[in-house]
Length: 236
Length: 236
DNA sequence: ACTACGGTTGAATCCTGAA
DNA sequence: GTTCAGGATTCAACCGTAG
Image (cartoon, rainbow over all chains, first blue to last red; front, side):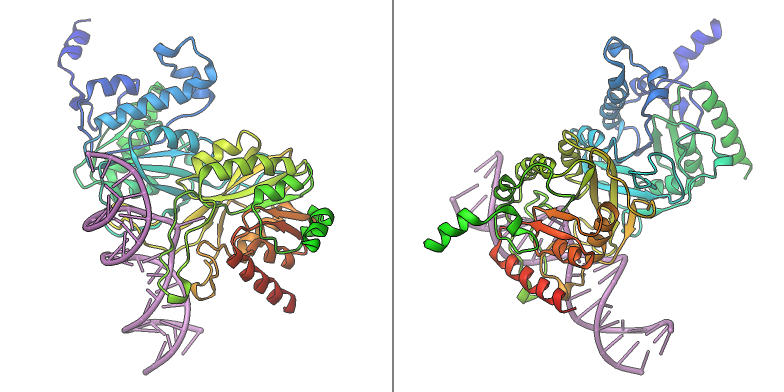
């Protein structure tokens, strides 16, 4: 009790930099001032898992199927606020939710690219009528104008999927892709924000790329996995 | 005068199969009955007021006709009507108009894929802040459920751009890509529809793939080019 | 068959001047 | 002030030729 009250008084948002933080991202962002981060890279949740875990209070009586969109949309607006000028958000999505995310992000950001992560390999789904969707998309939205670091790359990036035996999260992105995004749109020593950390891949990529990170993840299990992954990182 | 009236009485939509047809596609579709075509492949104007940057004097391409969102959206509805059950529309777009096209097509079609044509090259635009967009998208929407012919391919298709010296239309798609789409979603002898024929690439791909075609193009110049291209095709 | 080198391009974007 | 059309700009990737 005493310790908690001490924490709640003394803990600032900056104390959460480079740490595993089990929290709702909207709560975290409330603590963060305008323009405090240099880049946002994120892979926001869709679908059932999210609906069961992260319904936002103000919308709790609305239809369930809209909850995940509402959550992302509220987050996008806040992400815009905490990003500094001349920086970007890079937000992953599939071809099915690209449309709604694009139109929502477009309200705040100047969308200048869509990166195609070509991951190859097999897949599931409707084998008879559907092509295999062997890629994912990432929308790049600018607050102001963020310069590309290094060479001007194309938009189709090929990278191996995370080996299923090593995967710690169902939608885990490879370190290669995360690192490449971080390298293209931020500098060494910058602060990178990911409101939906999942298994903390963004955090691990930041350590490899010598960036600071801040982020949140609601699930205690994934935060525990994140702690293990970052500990491994330190030992490397 | 006499000949015109004869034509207007006797000319049916079926007389326009496998022919160059200079016409507004909405007018053509009015003549076509429900469920009369087996596949629609099209590359509509994206609504971006595109001015080709081609610097060869002989190829100063004009801006495209029908280059607005409303035109595409009205066409989509009619395309749905003229498609038979268990068939698809494959409609090209860029990452900038994907969102609006997706939401409009979704009103009628069950969207099951988005093909990425990875074309490489390019390089114009905002060199400092923007990645190179070296691909185009094609939305695959089902009326009913259209089976995939042959192998279940992935969705990222690499193919060379049309060589600039041979290009007859500022946004011309390669025969390879058109032929591959036609082969995946139709059978030999089927009727393939393209309301925005441009330089009649879809028609030429149909002849190579032994499909019948029907389509329209407003520009007399591009229809003339189409005639020449199809004549060349016959000689092959 | 290779590499080297110089010319050309791009469903773009920026800037300027006119209305 | 604002919108809009037209012209200038840009460089990594690609093509063609030469060695």
